[in-house]
Amino acid sequence: MQDTILKLENISKNFGGVRALRGVHFELKRGEIHALMGENGAGKSTLIKVITGVHQPNGGDIYLDGEKITLNNPKEAAEKGIAAIYQHVTAFPHLSVTENIFMGREIIKKNRMYNWKEMNAHAQELLNTLGSDIDAKSLMGDLSVAKQQLVEISKALSANARILIMDEPTAALTKHECEELYRIAEKLRDDGVSIIFISHKFEDMYRLASRVTVFRDSQYVGTWGVKDITNADLIQAMVGRELTQMYPPKTAEIKEEVFRVENLSSTGYFRNVSFSVKKGEIVALTGLVGAGRTEICQSIIGAMKLDSGKIFVDGKRVRNPNPLAAQKNGIGYLPEDRQLHGLILDMDIIKNVTLVNLGQFSKLGWLNGQKEEDAVVKLSGMMELKAGSLYDNPSSLSGGNQQKVVFEKLLVNDLKVMILDEPTKGVDVGAKYAIYEVMNNLAAKGYAIIMVSSEMPEVLGMADRVVVLRNGKVSAEYENENLGQEQILMAALPDYNL
Image 1 (cartoon, rainbow, N blue to C red):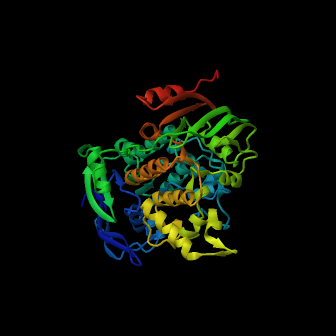
Image 2: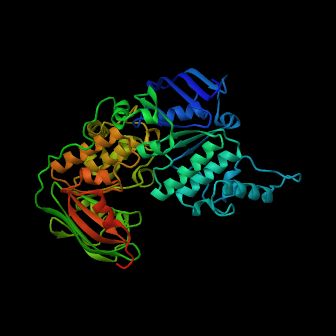
Image 3: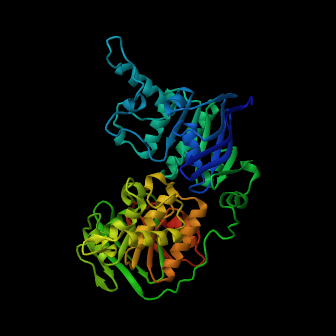
């Protein structure tokens, strides 16, 4: 136990009839970065909430520095030096960085006034120690996601955190921002902080961790040295089966053109963008961050202003595009940010799915609840949704299962074209395969699919054709035959003479 700072033995947690954790084990060493991996719904988030005092286990023991402890609430965990930062930063955007760092732990002067001078100085010192150029007096809401996460790390350090949990911290970051986070994590490790790093990205694990623990179906599977386990063995540990192919075989027959855009332009975002999609075809839009991929998709459905250009479905022009007109014309959109644009987190799963097409489930103004439930049961089975009940709220689901609910929203509509903006973002390897199968099945049924993706293997594994964007323009278009990552990247690299 000398080198072990945190140990959990036989931890169980139930929510009603749902067993979220079943006798799991976990051990964290001092000054270690330990990766925690598993499919969505495997129990990772529940374990983190047990460690941080949000949930109390129904069984098992927690040891800190060799001493058995009980964590009744997050405050007790913080007092013992345990802190967590999350993919979706829970900050106060209209308050300053200093106010966010010292929230609930303000430094008070003898006259009972806040000591802003000392708090600003201490906050700035913490930020500088991490190598950041953030001004402690700046507003939190003016910072990028990466910088907000850095402030959250500073907040944890200001409370003398010895154990830091990073839950999917790189999911919304660019490659450069990921490298910066890696640098900070390694610095914290070298300073003696122990880190639990949760991620679906294998590159995060290989870049940072010395050991990896895998959960599956709410149970502990095993712990390995990162250098001692292969990708294939890790995937099999996570999903419980061997994935001989990361991408399912294509069965769709590509037929006539269904969708076409001509010379789409939006000032400051993209210009003269043209491409088409055929029935049964998956076309990938790819390029570097800022190339205009998401903005093009949002303009097609009328969520963003389109300055010029034409949109056609089945040869018929779509005029004055707006989200309702897009849906009526058979164009569906799966947004990149599922929590901000895809879900009403405090409305049950069934209502989230059917909300976009209530007419299908109503007669004479009355909703047929049984018809709603039957439709969502069928869709949830197809998507392999993991939820305690379809009457639960999406806020209770893991990120990957939230994504599946957003996917189901598309499938209740009568669509011809599906625009999928980063459809597997924040989704584990097993759930990714399920989504890929759904995409291929939809293509086989004749849907035209536009897939926005930043992952080159995903683009090459799923697309029939690839449209590369650079500086808001189409720089290249390739049939996906003997296409390589290098060719796509060369077309995506900036050329400011365009």
